[in-house]
Image (tube, rainbow, N blue to C red):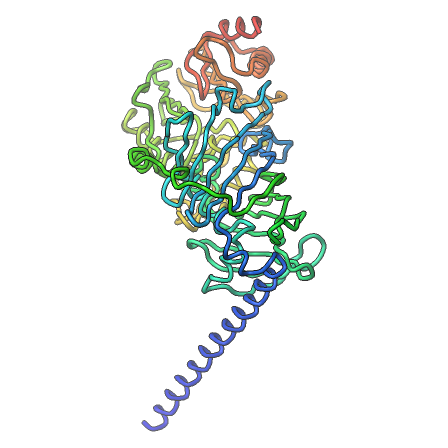
Length: 516
């Protein structure tokens, strides 16, 4: 009995020693990390000056790469050139953006205060609400802006070192190579998300800041789960108040570029009026009413109810339309957009519409991020996937995405996709609603497919182009590629329909192209 007691006491003592050593190690890690951050603060102008900053007004020019809807994942990417001024008010906890102008690849003029695109718009975002004020008229903004505002205030170059110094879980991580040499790395948690700060061991300034988090309110980024976004800084300039500030920013997510930014002017502690940041209470209420995650977007459009394109072929209109096709042995869905939750609602709707039939397949015809955002749910439910050969890599990357913050069905129970890779004409099903799937293989339709229903002489054109309300074609050159693909495949088409437009005679599209 005495022997057993001694063993137990020794075990408890050993465990206490291990815990003490772990605490000591963490304490050393925190102390070392804090020392590095303090040196970086001194190199930037001093911790006291950084803490005392009430605001920073930055004017900037930048290029945004629209990877989510470019022709191919590897680039070149569609981009927009923009400029604006942003007030980051740390005392008030508000980000205010104004004097904005932009010009994209498809615009002949700048979108600025003289154009109808933005008017004289001022955008506001706080940790609680986002709104825009256009010529005195307020409108609620997006929850994505709220998340971005919170991160820019705490993790931007003005306050990142203060945020790190105040983080109770600040600790060292292994050095990492950037710019050809090893960087010191410190880390901490921000709103439950891991943050890493890369510090130049010689100059001591911040090389980069990286946060890994989900973006559940962003249509483009929510499908990718928890994504690492890294902002790299350069061209540190000594400003008149003695603070060094980076005039060059490079933002990357998932290892690919998002934004390249040049800061053209910096002003600190600019006077402001409380009214400059005030959002009306009714707009705050509207914001709360519309603040929902992409995963919670309702299916369908009450103003445009589902309707038949042909017997057993139903289109459900929404921001990203769905087509449900009844075949003798099951239902085929065209597209898996937005989110896993959205796809779950699509499948429920299709089963109610055609009771007793299983979901036999989903056809995904494009690689645009909002178009494939819900494809993970089809993998989770074991639904066979018909996808273009060129799009398999991006879909595989989507299916392997980390969903730690908001796990979906595939994250909770991983499965392998049931692939049907389309490289040439592929037939799906039999009977009156037999489908034929064709890769476009055209210049802009490289990553898209068209789906043909021979019995109905109906062609689904994916997202290659759209029909405007006045009957003109948006991107007529792209529509011409569809016409050429139809001729190439020898298809007898009477009507066409797309993700973003309704049933239209092919001859009407051809006439619009000819007029253009």
